[in-house]
Image 1 (cartoon, rainbow, N blue to C red):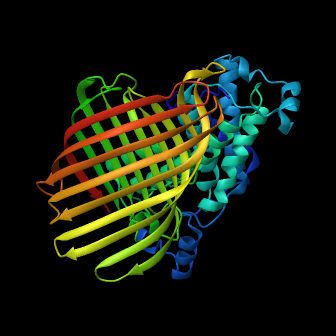
Image 2 (image 1 turned 120 degrees about the vertical axis):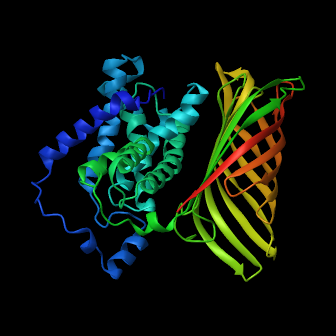
Length: 477
């Protein structure tokens, strides 16, 4: 699959116009009602409990509009590829559709790494959001990502459907779609007014365009009204690090340059753990590098959890999570989508000393790993395997922090040269907080990716580094 994603600045207005025109033709006339005073815009407790239980910010489902939006997501991108960019793969016919409908014709494709591993999950997030933003719960919206991916693979391209595209678009789209849905709703405070409110609406639209579009059509954009329970209860902690780093590549001296890291924590593992994506962790690393400006993107989303034990001095939870990882540095690139079972623990040793641990293991659904020997012209292999992680951290008086992290994986190639791979990443950070907003930190780390081939010599890619940065932290409630 070689689909080109629509540029938001160019395509969002056209997409909105198409949706509005179709809905205007199909939907019955709306009954205009006078807006109730702000104080009277209250729902019964029973209705609020029903909304919370359904895990949706809307009490009413809009199937027709959701289906139309999913269709527009398909047709708009295909039209852009076919008539604006004149791409050969978009020149479909009844013959190509008939060929693609045969399951025996599915085959792995050779598209660029970035397109397959980042572009497709982003595209899939639109399919998921078409139902998620129209009153459907997380689990009710999951099929939309699979349906949208299948329709695109079968009807929108000349090439045969690719299993790697289907997995990346659907599973990755679910993870990114739910993440952007929750964050976009968190950004907007329905009680705010004026310029700040308009700015938040625009930012939320950029995070999840489908949600922003539906807010416009529902008359919620800029309207002063009650916030949902999810918007009021969830907390968001945001950290941004700016500094410098030195890294090496495969036992060379490497380079020195600027470094930036942004992390976001939505919710907490210890609350609402029965609800999907009540806890989200996002990490993005940027910097001066030989390969790309964006070096790491990782997303963790809780699916469901169970409390194992709890008392005044300790907590233990088992959390099933969905994970998306993207690494691209000067030594190697790597991307994987996985599901893990995590054991999360917190120990309160005293009023000023806290210790936490996290151990996780689970299957890698699909990974893309670099292959220097090439396979049918492609410079990476596809595989599945096992992902593991472990971390520990200590907090001394909310001033001194030390953390150590390990993430690793084993990948067996299912499409590519006969091979298997081991990924190991180790990092540890020492940080001192001057106050609740500013801190200084130092982080040394080491990445290694080993490739073992049946018909070629072994390949080892290493990436040692050390970073120093200033951190700014803020918590939104």
